[in-house]
Image (spheres, one colour):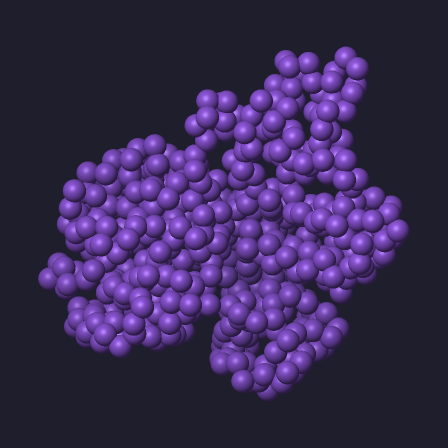
Length: 575
């Protein structure tokens, strides 16, 4: 079991307990444990084996026992007992925006709603707003939420898919006879959500059976869909399908290109090959007239034979990459090693799990030269946001930590809320004392496109603002972006010398890849930040980099590739 599998079970336990209206403290303990487990730098299996599990904050002896039971059996008795309760069928309803535990139970009792299909039928028939206290607007919101739910069902977030895949690859690499192994499909292109996972392998003929046995016999496998000599498909306990293909070395590169996709990119490459008298398939590149095999052992063969340089997987969407490659104008894509610091993170001063020093020391181990501490402002009460006086003291604490720790610069900052009228929720006198001011929207997501755009444009016009955080407000698979005129916001950012954030937090990845390209073309800069609420989350920078690469970003487009001196100049809005 992966950490995310254990966390998912704990979240479901919390959902069922909420539907049963049980002790809120007990519910919060499971929610907190789920978050802790997701954020753990270590594998829960390893912690359980060494007896260290009970020492993890938020994991007491009772929860540790349940985790150990889940690791050994794939589930736990308490969870299975809860699933027998009739309210368990209602847990999917909690995925619909506007439907909380109390409403889900009420809809079940008064309208017989048991699942999302029942809810949709009732809403379309106008039955919801016939109930006391439920307005027509909520019914509309629920219907919109169901549409969103159906768009995302069966899609897995990039970070989750990578976690499973890297674990599987590790298992397969331990098998004798493996010569080469690669991730393919949309995961290799690092799309923000993944439908299924493709893995390609070259294995010695004498070891192929054992490789397939190891793959289909993994603990995480819930069902073997198909098993063959060269291809097997399994369904993991999480619900994601994984396909493994064993290939001959002669055609491996061509197959890697073919199974990486996208479909539109592959079609464009095949059309280009056809114009050159060639055929490209998963088996190689062939001369069309004679069917003579010209290459395909290496992926570079495919591009070379159609007179193109190698195109990075993240760009293969047929969105101009072939034309750019033809002209020698492919971007020099940003890499993780280009990042010199992280400019959004939270500490215990608001809703973070670590101190200023702990965040800085972890960032230093990552090789960063600077970070910015940007806790929440007072409008976000649930996160313990800071008022002016608290922020002033916090700035002094940051300066003290900066003097204490060598080898990394700690910048003082704040994630300040943009209020519905566009004002900021902290006074200018305190914002001017910060090295970095990040403006963010955390409320009233349902404003009209015109209102939300006006709100954000006014917010970033404040001369103290340096970065606009998670500009569209979306949560992947959970909350759609709020309505904004992104072009108007980009124009305002350019006018006010404000960078737009690419938030690397796995649930956000906001800006999206297409937005990154739009911002790049406008000349506005981007800041790739993790929005970390725990030190270990700083490693999530990899997901922001993946999105940035899909958005054609180069190091010069991103302010946290700058030297500290150049960054300070940008933050001072000089030049």
